[in-house]
Image 1 (cartoon, rainbow, N blue to C red):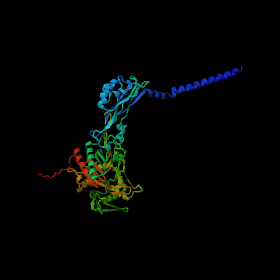
Image 2 (cartoon, rainbow, N blue to C red):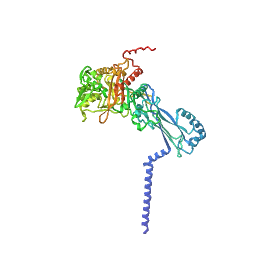
Image 3 (cartoon, rainbow, N blue to C red):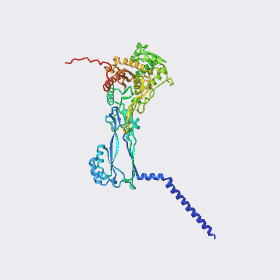
Image 4 (spheres, rainbow, N blue to C red):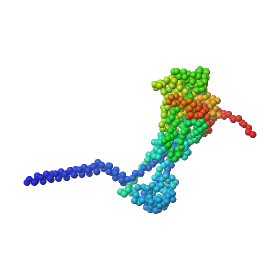
Amino acid sequence: MSEHPVAGWRLVLLGTLFAGCALVLGYRLYSLQVREAPRYQALAQELHQQVRTLQPKRGDILDRHGHPLAVSVAYHDVYAHGPSVENPREVAERLAPLLGVDSKEIMERLDPTNPAPVRLASRVPAALSDRIAALRLPGVYLEQHYYRAYPQGSIAPQLLGFVGRDFVGLAGLELSLDGLLRGQPGKLQTERDTVGYEIPLGRRAYVPPRDGATVVLTIDRALQRIAEWELARTIEEQKASGGAVIIMDVRTGGILAMASFPSYNLTDEVIFDPDRAAVYKPVTATDVYEPGSVMKIFTMAAAIEARLINPETTFECTGVATIDGATIRNWDFSAHGTETMREVLVHSCNVGTTYVARLLGPERLYAYLRRFGFGEPTGVELPGEVGGFFRTPEDPEWSNVDLATNSFGQGIAVTPMQLIAATAAIANDGVLMRPTLIQAIVEADGSRREIPPLPVRRVVSSETAHVLADMMVSVMEQDGLAKARVPGYVIAGKTGTADFPTATGYLRGRTYASHVGFAPAHNPRVAILVKIDAPEGQYGGVAAAPLFGRLARQLFVHLGIPPSEPVPEEPHVAHR
């Protein structure tokens, strides 16, 4: 009788043990089949499915006339799947002459027990890959890739930029327009058996790649070549350290040419050199400089618009102005005596421009400079654009000396892009346009979207713009600017010279020489900016003006712009 309770206790313990095991197994089964099912399904799919990424074609970059500047050229890698190759010897013998290798080498790589694809050749051109595809060899397939090519050679490198090995843009428009150009990759998913072989009739999922858009630029290939060649010629002649040229359509803001020096070669096998990182920037939008006397046209525009002066308003120039204890002198230390505002601009009189700035006062002068676009990025489609800067009365270090020097282009930092956009605003009846490099976008399906010109704002009245253009024509009529003129054409322009600024002052004898202008002056089509860094000739009229004239002469011919007045005949010289 006493053993029965013990036996009962053992039965209870055993039953509890079995019940616990059942609960653990049940919970584990539940975890495997329900809670962790998605993870194990994913693992199973990973074992039985292969996914290949399909590279899209990166969009091309064309000039305004459709000439290709940067394109994606297709090539193929040749692969073989050993277990799917029915006759390795035949495959090797038929591929060997096409790939330029020995058939034995191919035979050695066709392993029927290796489920992993084997690459037989790389970077096979399209014409050859078509012949390989036509053979229809079981187990042999082609995988398409692209490389970037430049059909025109290395043209507009800082503008176009380049891509990395992963085909992602690293500089220039290739970087800033990467989202448009890159496209979307596709994928090919195939089902494989337990050994890793592809199941011929297994499930397949194909998502085609979406190719990138083609971008049509405002750039004119011929004008770009002219700008680059003439800039390089001037840099060499002037023994200068650098320079830039921009040619703009004043009515649309479209940039027809943009060149800078130093430069680099897009066709080099290895483009990027970390020791030369500065040359890859589009410096016309990313680098600032003090423009010098070209800023006088905007000071004059502000005062004319505010009805404080007109071209015939007179001023007595003594050659010296004293501002808060600082002495302002003319660039050549001369005194001009009584001069009109037109003559202040023609003589490039610092003292006269300081007088105009004081009439305006800081609030109006800086308001007009901002209206012309200085102090903020232009919005051009280039990476890294900066807005430049100038001090205002809100800055603790500002003084009336800043007001004076800013009025004639010192103590103010601008980009070449800002400067040509502001100059073009005067040519465009006083309306500032956003500079642009894009004329149209063509999607992969062929649909084309034109990019309309974008007016930013009216800066000055049409009347003020015409008055100022006429004053700038007077500037161009000086004897010293003969090389900037083109016979038969009336051109509006202004030169500028500024010393290199340093942390402690200015480097005398080392200058930025500039020339800006537009033509024809009374029916403007194009604006031109020339900037030369540290030229031997130092002054804008010596170092930059001749380049301006050569560019103007050639673009008038190229664009078919007729003369605005009779072209004087050259004297006939008899030769023996």
